Amino acid sequence: MAAVDLSESTPSQTSATLTAVLASPPKSSGALSRGRVALAATTLGFEAFRIVNLFGEETHSTGEITLLGIEQEAWMPARRTIRQALKAADVVLLGYGTSEPSGPALGHHREQVEWLRREMAETGVLRIVTVGGAPRHPSRWHRHTFRTRPGVAFPDALQLEMGSESLSDHLARVRPSLGAAETVRRKKPA
Picture 1 (tube, rainbow, N blue to C red):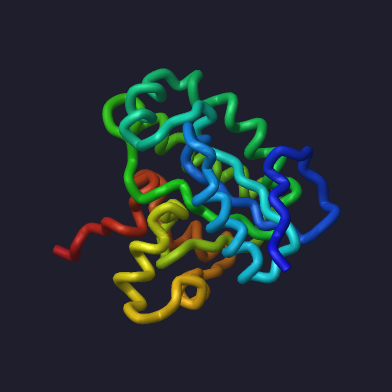
Picture 2: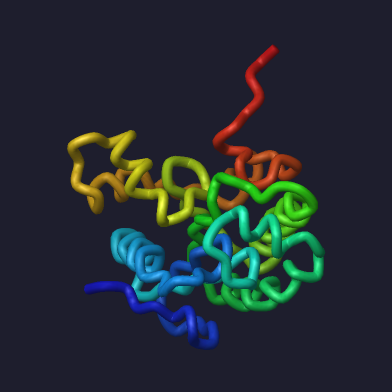
């Protein structure tokens, strides 16, 4: 049975819910991302899922977030929605992407990611899920699994690539000052 999309409903604790934190609402229908989050939720055994976004304005790409996210105020409206969803979340799937905006939006993006981490701890989130150990956006999951699991059907490859860890392990693994891409681009030892 497919997981139910609760993104447009008021968060509640009525069923086991996966909350996916993506980058921004899509300018298109968002069907691909929604379908992939639904697949992840079903694969993980959740009855329902909810999608929230780090940046609240509709965009098509990280480049648009660079242009629209120059002022910190542009990032603030998303926090209320995220906070409500986290309170009702059983597990959080990080899928906001491994690419970050540039310019002034970069700092605001990193602040938002750090705020998300603190908020997850404060609201009692216990488990984090990522694909391939990074906050890959659902639109990139197929490309990633094709590369890491050649010849394996996408749903099976996704199941193999989804990793779950405790919030405390996640926070110990990532370096907050690096933002979205810290799990992908690490400094090499000297």
